[in-house]
Length: 280
Image (cartoon, rainbow, N blue to C red; front, side, top):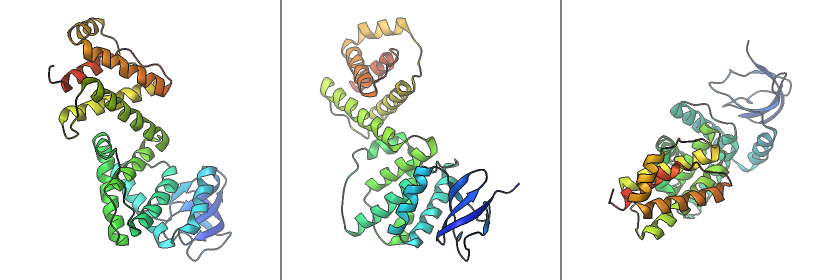
């Protein structure tokens, strides 16, 4: 049975507020959805090639309040970008990306037109941790530049990649940025403690941040990694500096996340740290 919505208000040619017995009041977003329609008209949900549905009250309110500040043709273009992202990621997008990405791209265009430059300190890490999202974000930036005739700084690819990652994993940008901030802190501690400078294009650095990110994620979710007492004892004896540093990193994670971290993480961190000193 097809979902049918009754239009309550037309916001523009592509966005309408509608009502449905199942979803109640929603925002429907689709190319040409509001064109030649009026209040009380019925809209089949699958009428457009793809119609997005906003059901969260807070997201709806934020999106509706955002619309007056954005050109209608840009709203339509961003809708096409979201379709492109969903197709490339092969996953349904969390509805919060409609507000977040619309807001981000609109202001990013304004910044670019004013030639406001900035850097993204986590650009390498974002590409390393989320390669698919980064690749899709690169295509999105290219499409925006072609459409608007403005040039984005490279850092925008990273920020858009984070929005995509957030939308396909249902993680909030706040949590994702919290992970990255902690990751950066751990890397700084490692460099200072071992008196080394990590080269970002080095495979060992790539492996380290991959592992730290997974360790943070496991700790945040309370996922155990198992226990190997004999291996732990061997690592403690053979590589005491890296073993003690691994414990220090675990303590920092615990304090930042305010959650316990599985002690078995120490073993894996010790191995990665030892690789960095080229003595393993």
